[in-house]
Amino acid sequence: MTGPKKTVLQTVGVVLLMGGLAWASVPFYDWFCRVTGFGGVTNTAETGSDVILDKTIKIRFDASKARDMAWEFKALQPEMTLRIGETGLAFYEAYNPTDRPIAGQASYNVAPFDAGAHFTKIDCFCFTEQVLMPGERVEMPVTFYVDPAIVTDRDAKYTKHITLSYTFYEIDMPETAALDAAPDTTKAN
Image 1 (cartoon, rainbow, N blue to C red):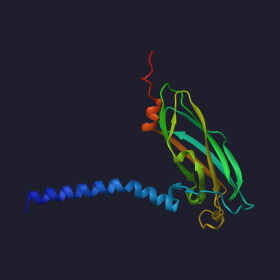
Image 2 (cartoon, rainbow, N blue to C red):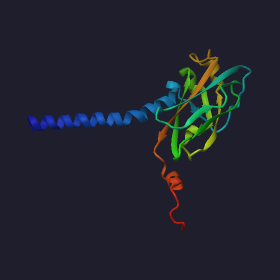
Image 3 (spheres, rainbow, N blue to C red):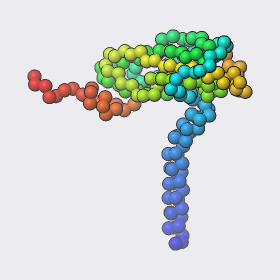
Image 4 (tube, rainbow, N blue to C red):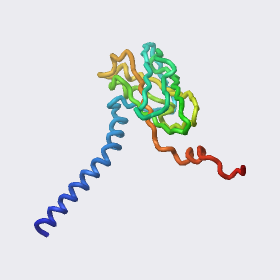
């Protein structure tokens, strides 16, 4: 194979390689952030910490939404102070003021970024997609603790406050929710 055919095959190969790398970059970056806490990504646990220190830390709660998200979304308390290792429970509120069902998914991060690896969620509304019917208002909990290892972390040990931020984005309606929201056409008038 020579000339133009070889060049075309090489170009197609480069395009396929670049496409594959672009496709794999999102899950790889997500995995990297979860493992290292980079970018304020948090950890998860089944239960609270076994150790609770006498040292306290202030947790601030932030809520925002994507520009095209029609919901209203807010933290129900601006902040709380917890002992490091103590389990905290905070609530966010979402409201769908529209006349249509809307599905949403929350992305999150923690600031400062160094504290992300020590912020541990036990349960969170952000773990699943949310569907709000027209006019529906819900309170959504997040249960968490700050890992006591933060006090010995070279970069995070001087952290006095942590900000937990959520941003809601509209997503495609899950199939089960779409079926639940569809009008019942089997009833006779």
